[in-house]
Amino acid sequence: MYLIKLAFDNLRHNVKRTLAMIIIIAVATMAIILYQGYVEYSKEGMTLGFIQSTGDFQIALTDYWNNNASETHIMNDEMLKKILAKLKGDSRIDYYDCVYDFSGIVGNENSSAIFWGKGFDRPEKQYSAKKGASVFGDDENCVLLGEALAQKIGLKEFVEDEYVSLLTNSPESGMSLCSVKVNGFTNSGVLQNDSGLLICSRKTVLDAMEVENSATYIQVFLRERNSNKIKDELTNYFSSENIDAEIRTWKDLNPSFEQINKLNEFQFYIISVILCVLIFIALLQSVSTSLFERLGEFGTLEAIGLKKKKIIAMLLLEVFYLVICGLLLGLLLSLGVNTYVKIFDIKMVPPGYTEGYSLLFYFSTANIIKTCLFVTVCCFLSVTIPVVSVYKNSVNALIHK
Image 1 (cartoon, helix red, strand yellow):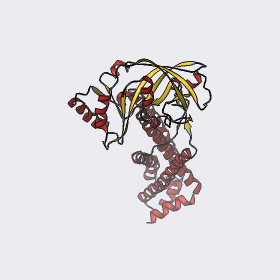
Image 2 (tube, helix red, strand yellow; image 1 turned 135 degrees about the vertical axis):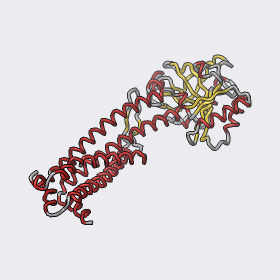
Image 3 (tube, one colour; image 1 turned 60 degrees about the vertical axis):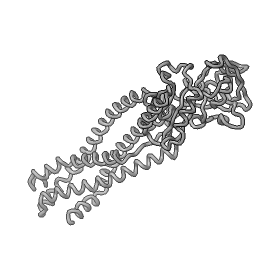
């Protein structure tokens, strides 16, 4: 009990030095936690972005993806009914959406441009109108245009009751020409994509082409990420029912994910090593210098009867107090920074994007524990040299240090 009080009094008597040490430890803790949080958020955000774009998995005709998404590979009404009957009622599935891919020329009296369109049963789940309204309403014969595509055909500002003509082609009906209402402009965030993007309901495109119920593929969104298990079940079902379809998971559909993830992990690993080394050196320098300045004090304590072992124990207790206070302050600062970026909605805009994404930090218990252990080890290692000096040097030597 005496050593505990003595260690506490030593820290309290030199407030400036104690606060400086606590701040150094807190800043080091905050830096590591925020960096790890950003790394985890980047990985999680990229995963969610791909899943939101393609679904947890997609179902299409066999060899659809091997034929560069040939427009002749269309699932007919009979096949859709069989597959949807299997998907319906599965509690593991959040929702599913039939998608019809089509392309052609869109234009008005001003100009025309090539588009690549998608018809969804539930387009509002993936695309919202930045200007105007959604593609649903009393009149389903309407579309959303990418902002860059709208500018190509002279629609710089959204105007209600604006119509455009669509010229497209289908294997069943051949060339089709129709007039649709522009309900709004959308923005995917990627300029190259928006320069030809056209979104509508699947009913709109099927009516325009005068074809029966059909879809290019079905995208499925799950409540939890267990796509492999459901994929195996559906594959067995397709085999037993002689359904000529195959399944691709979101990772299969986005091969760039693993490449980007590995590159990011390598960069994050290099930066993490550099960050940890710098933090270790900073802690070692600051803690060691502070304790070396007190060697004379330790010699005096030994001279009045305090044994070396107890002096060393007192040193370790002081470091323990500093670590606890520094870690707690570091955690509070990390939460404060995360709350700040949430409140002010700070965004980051990657190269090639027209819109950014909110900067957030993903805190996990495992990463916080690792950070606390790392900082604790660094702090205790930093007192190794002063402890050795106290242990090896005589009382006179310590007093005259």
